[in-house]
Every structure is written in C-alpha cells, then in structure tokens.
Image 1: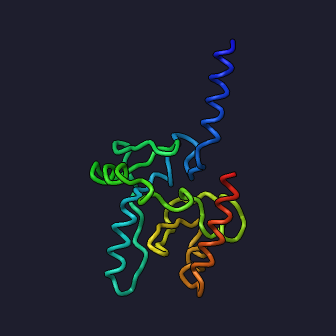
Image 2: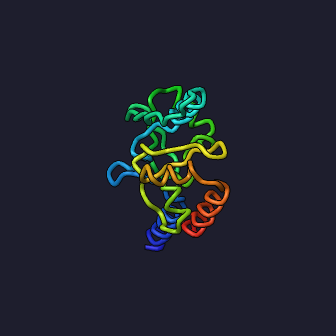
Length: 158
C-alpha cells in the first residue's frame, strides 16, 4: 500500500511539474498540430518578401511526432522533427503556444490554433486572433508587450 501511495504522489508531482502547453483535448497535440520548424522557414521567406505578408502555418503529420513537455509536437518531415529534437527550446513558440497578446493583457492562458503568429525579437509568438497579432505588429514598444507577457507567464507557472 505504501508503494502505491508513493507512486501516486510521484505521478501527481510529474503532472504539475510540467509547464503548460497549448494542446488539443484529444491526443495531446501541441499547437494544433502545426510544425514549429515551418514557422521559422516561413519567417525567413517573409523577411525576403517586401510586403511581409504572413504565410500560412504548415500542419504537421502524425508520422513525424516528438513527445516534449507532455505534448505531441508534429512536423512535416523527419528533417524538421530532428531539427526540433536537437534544440526544442529554440524552435518551440514562446509561452508553449498560448496567446502572447492575452498574456500581455493579463487575460491568462488562452489557447491558439497556430494560424496567427509572428516573430518578435527573433522569437516565435502565437496569437488567438489576428487583431492581437496586429496590435503587436503596430506596437511602438514591443519590448513592453514581451515583458508583460513574460511576467504573466511566470505567474501562470507558479
């Protein structure tokens, strides 16, 4: 009985010790199955595009799945999966895919579908709505938005 109790306590601790990740209710798929490596490729392509329109996010495939932070991260190819696996902290979205704008406004963890995104200060941020993304794009003080979102994120982690 003591061993069972110890296992339950350890299991419970592991659940709560993991950072929250924006994931689906079924299958624990991170960021609505979008390939986080593809955002980086799209960002590079958009920066070479003079009108800097946002390119669509690429949906990953279940064949290319990597378990990280208690979620299944999907990718469009084995090469993308390997790149993420070698340095996930570089390629995961900030706030594990929760809406950066909602955090900066003190609204807590708001899920995103991975279709509204942007790079600010060379990091990937996801947004619940196009208007939230646009407010960051138009911001005269993006570092303030990032600082506020980071503060809210730290509160959520406690």
